Length: 261
Image (cartoon, rainbow, N blue to C red; front, top):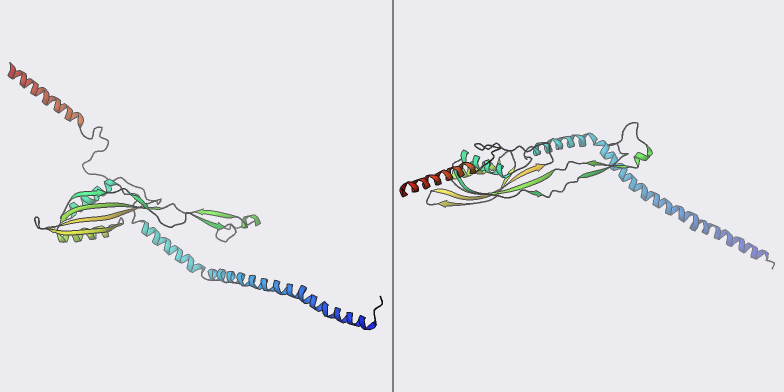
């Protein structure tokens, strides 16, 4: 089949049109899509760069704030003993009675229970970051690794205490102040007060909570209870009491025998 010159010219014109169209759809469009994707990626990277630059600009401020916060944390930890046990409760109430005009005939002591506190136990850090990088040891493999930095396992405990007492109005106010300002953290949960017409004093029921922290540098020290000797083999003196009872029984038997004669 032989094409006319006019047909050849038409084909050449069509090719001249199709080539730019093909270039537009297959080259320019693809380039535009890649450019848009790169621009979007650059925007994300630029925001990260701006964030890191802001951190770098305020580095010293963050260091100073962290140190100040750490000092505050250590100061707060000093207000919590390592543990709180029944003997501590009893001695605390005895001190209240001895130091204030109050009588506390009953005390109820609950078991210590842990308070759930939201706090991380481990922190994952990029091994290639400046915080953990070691001069002269930064390898490509290390930059892709992560390390876990353990944080202290500190647990907060609460111990409930309830007491009933009789006191003057002034003594009650002093006791409230004494509990609220105790160096070892405590908090009053409830307080009910009525006037006792028979004694002329206030009859009060108080519930408060003592707090303690485990996992700190503090160690629990058992209180020294006055008048109680540790290491006693027989704390109830049953041996001496049994001997006294036996002696009394023998004396009664001897007296009965004498009367029979």
